[in-house]
Length: 109
Image 1 (cartoon, one colour):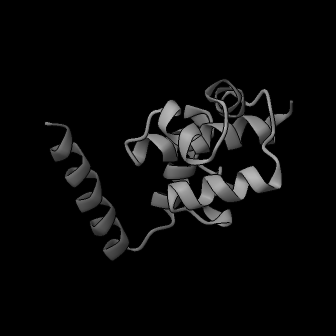
Image 2 (spheres, rainbow, N blue to C red):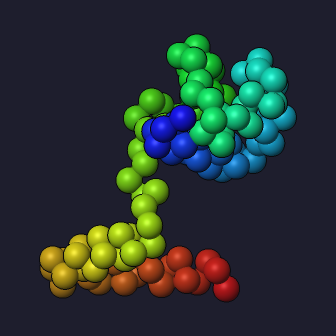
């Protein structure tokens, strides 16, 4: 399979984990064999339209959210994008970014 199926699989896995669901439980909710869901999450198999709709309902996600892959980039690309954003930010935006970063760092402690 291609890059889209791999990224879609990663996104489904991310949303499943965010919803505290195991592969087995999500597979049960969408009436699918866990082994087939595993193939979807690994990007080996692309879900059918009906399956995609069932996944969206089970994960409380919309189609747009499922196909938002922008942050699936290399560390280098992410770093460069962040640097560019910071370089073009106003003072107020930088202050907001600073608060956000520190909030995230505080969560990890």
